[in-house]
Image 1 (cartoon, rainbow, N blue to C red):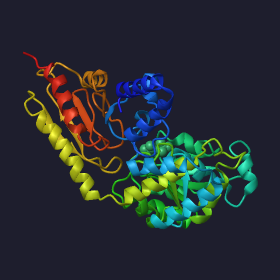
Image 2: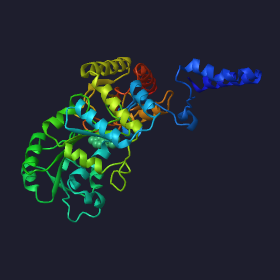
Image 3: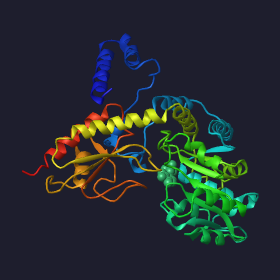
Image 4: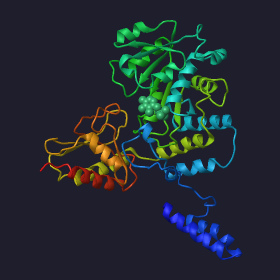
Length: 422
Ligand SMILES: *Cc1c(COP(=O)(O)O)cnc(C)c1O
């Protein structure tokens, strides 16, 4: 219901109340008829009330752009879970057993995001078998192992999540460096799944396991394909994380930590709801735990080929609508690992179109409806494996709601047409 219609309806209700006492019951009845049985509560559009303008997501699953929206069945599960209290430890345990079974791994934990999974997973490795250390990290680490080996090219924007546990990174570049890097302080070997580097996953695992050191793989943005949810644990990674709010379309503040049972148990001890732990500030509520379980159920019902075909269709439709714009070239691009879905890549000759990619992005953002293009538009690549550039427009189609591809195509055509040099 638009705010305008709601106001009208409320107005009608108010008139009915003014018309006579018996009409007091009319308003809720009208509401219920209008909004279906469960509409006992009136929902207020707080985005509208706060003056925050939502947008059509032609970007992708970017955190600051709120990543994804939950499918209806996930939203319904969250709403139902919100109605009754439960014991959080029981819910975390039960959801962990369920997820481990569905995702073919030993154990699982719902965290408040992939970044939180990196924190409590690292804490698990540092404190395994040493409950006193749970209290001590990140400052009282004198008698703890504290070195995490990582490829230099795998240092990234989530380093801080691991460093929160008081560890220090030991960087390696070649397999020989790596073999030499293990010592009595080594506590974990960290791998960034979408990172580039000389050392393969197989070599990474083999050498670490020769030294009895656990390996963590950060695959936060790396579904689809759906089977990645078990691929890396089955390869032998001791811990693997995925973001719950990206491709899986669960609540944005959720993540999956999957892996070895003893490490998952240790991660739980370091996590909310336990007080005085490193993870206490990374609480997941009952709504989010249930929301992620429902999102996993939803995601496992999807089909990789069907998803890819649909994204391809959207990208093709937009490309076709732009075909009359001078000098414009379109190409469908699928990043290798992270965000592994078709994106529409548009390039043009700035001698023919007098506009920068950054200006296109700004005009789309300011227009009506508001549209957010992929942040690689007009600038450097926004995430691993994406192209970028000043005369480049990137459209992420996978987070569009059905039909929005037509609006994106129309608005892009309008913006680009005004830039044609005569
Ligand atoms: C998005 C992302 C994260 C963080 O995920 P959240 O669920 O937002 O905490 C961590 N690592 C990588 C590689 C990511 O892409």
